[in-house]
Image (tube, rainbow, N blue to C red; front, side):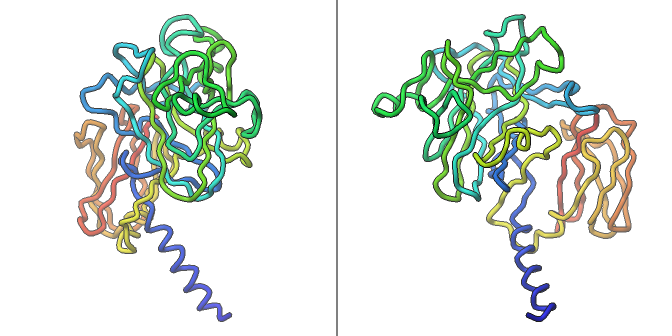
Length: 331
């Protein structure tokens, strides 16, 4: 085949795939790729007027890293979900059975068994838990009410309702600082089922739903990994958050999606590439206040933000046709 034709076909396919990638705004689905999906939990839409809060601290397990997390700061809901749900929409490209684990830590008290859980539901073709690291292991549990009518599955000991598992961790909140945060997501009181699974029979859109249970349970990120992917690969703290997918985007959106920032997180300089020429860049803090305005002429620009305080910022441009917004984490 003619090389120019091959290049043209590859270019068209790449453009079509790339053009569907959008800035995550909490409503668009996070897209699974190569059997891995990573979601920073503060990227979800926290219900307005609820007691969901965000916080941040240095990451003891990642040099120079910052953990941005969510937690419930209100009345505890041990017998039923609170109704203040956070829904993370996801897009599965590779059907199969995936393990879910979220990274968290106990944010209050000295006990392993308090302030250590939240309600969890995955809208999928199957949602269940096992004691062994195998999706086909027995025994297996699934939440009420479906477990009550399934002869092959048991109901969890302890709380379960409306398709939700009580999902908890049990790391010592006063122990080794390096072990306080971890990917631990158990269910079943008294006899932990450590592996929570979801089966997606077809490519498409699904959802992960989190609701409040204990207060002061800090939750950093959710990771889904297909059964043929190892935990060590999927739970690598250097993995970036998954991209979001927007089916409404067209090839006219390519320029704004190409804009890249490196390194991010950063403690000093960042380099921005693939900018529209003659851009006016605006950096705002998490409250929307402008902290910097930069005029650029070329497609690449180095910016020093070492004088900014630690936290989350957004960089955007004033070009309506090729407008973009990118998140920057200053550490």
